Length: 290
Image (tube, rainbow, N blue to C red; front, side, top):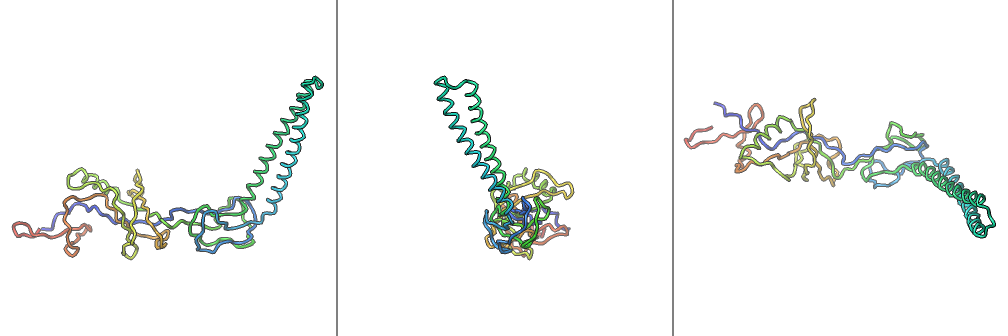
């Protein structure tokens, strides 16, 4: 008689795929012509490093005009302030009528408001100038450049100029069958296993070798994908040597539960049935193999 199917094992090797911990697609926020590329494709860049400067003469002229408007508004405000001070002195000596005093004070308030408007226009002009120097928002590895010197780029275009990816650490997105999780939940109600907390996740590379650094399970989805019948997990794995690249197909060894008083047996003594489940042949107390 073949042995009965054993209970489902608790260590699974579900398929997984690596993803960048952070990803930034750089697109221009203003229209302009690329002056040059300030990075080497494939190199590490830091947050705030410039990637592409645009021809910004038009934006610089707009900022200069806005600064001149601010200076003019400041001069008008100073003149209105002097008039307002004189009006206060003359009103106290009954030389200036109340109507004229109110007109001068209104002119002073108008000049103060004009200065605020000019300062706001300067800020508005400064934004496109700052956008004309395209920078990396995150630290990571910069990919290939999709534009060359002299290329015209437009605001919010569909094609990214380049992509910056943070590769240390990396995400490993794991999918596990919902039926397996349901079977595990049922077994958790028994006394022989306990839910595993804080156990690291081992990553198996495409050739079957074990990745030297262990990851940490940080996210478990709360819904089942109706198309695949699986649940998504996310593991964070250190990647200081950049061995794991985004898009790699790997496997994750996730220990969802711990079998109490379990026996550790040699791998040579383990066989598998047609369903891929593991079992071992043992000799019972009656010297019978089962």
